[in-house]
Image (cartoon, rainbow, N blue to C red; front, side, top):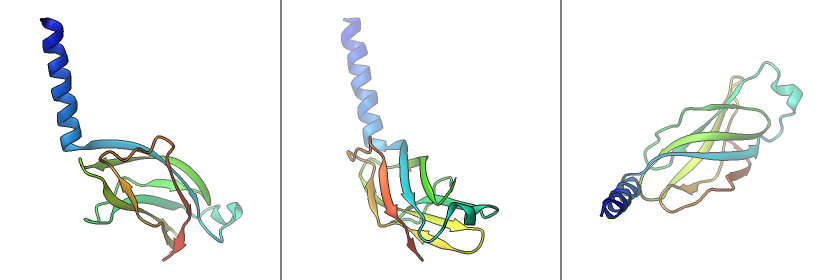
Length: 119
């Protein structure tokens, strides 16, 4: 009897998480074009995950010309479009294409954004 209640509670909790979304950590890899590692000395570049629907941004990560960083994203219960944007202190800006993140989309292998495009 206790096992049945425990199992029912667990299923209800998992259903609530699936229905409301939550935090998702995903590894994002890629590269910034036309920038050599030496060019980044003294120039910080920060990458944000940006909701294509709302414009809401994640907490950014400092990245180099070739990067592979874990990003914490707050996602909803349904997959939604996001893009990744890099802004450098020298004024250069770059952006990825859109990716569906959240819902039943799995990113166990991370997201490879490839070469970002200058904005």
